[in-house]
Image 1 (cartoon, rainbow, N blue to C red):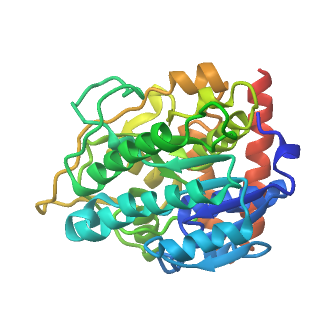
Image 2: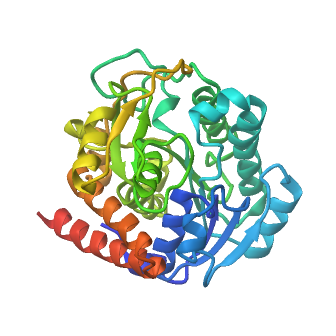
Length: 365
């Protein structure tokens, strides 16, 4: 369960707040009363969650590149965050084939610069650095990958995230371990999540945004790999895990034991083939919605992937709250509201409040 009192007036830095997941996290932190500084490139799409939900309202919004180490370090020293969430990344598999240098620079060197800024700041007490479920060496298993399984990656995106995980582990052991006579170092955790869905995602080459764009135009959506199975989850589920994890990292006694890697994935039966997701959205959208198989040749993507979140369930008491059926319903509802020109910041805050209430009931069940 999230403790709102913990977050009230808490100084928090979010990298990547102009993106989809970072935008939702920033809105949630604002809802909890945190003092947020966001550092990121301009919004990655047009439209974007950042713009339509006015994510920058009430926060210290800074446009910058993680390649600018000195600027990042200066920002951290000026704002003195107690908590860092690192979400800035090049997040797309297919784009990583076209832009490998950009992908490694963002996902590896960007992570390195965040760790360096934390190391020298002296103010950060806990940090959560986001990687991906694709950081594991994919063996095509029909069971979930655990945090102790080998890292790897066939494509530039996946391997860049595996490299980021190795980097985080190295910094944790080299610089963030308590030595006799020293002050308590920052507690650093990495998190790995499944295929995130939710309102406000307009990235290219992502399933739900591609579907929503096609439906809005009255076109049939082209689907590359209908048999691929992925662990689908609403964006608020893993974000709740991040918030719970930070609260545990702050514990003066046991916090250090939570400074490690964590999976936050959906329940096993919410890992579904792409075709299942498409059919669900076609049926829920109504007349005019359809899909067509894209028969062109495509770059390699793993066919099957699941996460084992047993550790988060056992040690954090974190469980997915919005199962896939609800996740799809709330996602579709969001895009319908956007099409009706509703106040999307209000829609987001209402979904966050509803989710919090449901997760509170879920935790006590």
